[in-house]
Image (cartoon, rainbow, N blue to C red):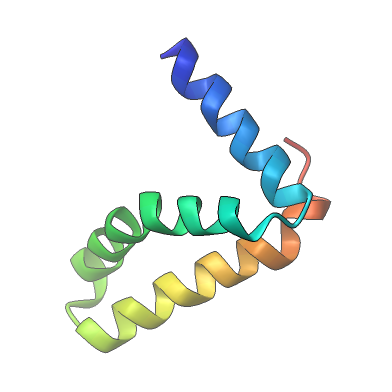
Length: 68
């Protein structure tokens, strides 16, 4: 667990530094989980995909303002 927290901290720092390869890692790591979560509520493939895209884009845009 401690290693995972350390790894996620590195990802947050990379996102704050606008490192696109880090965003790609975050995208690949979380897209399926986010899609599954959205699908459970929406039962709509296209809308679930759109929600995932919007969520991750907003993360990229707003990470600098996050207090983590």
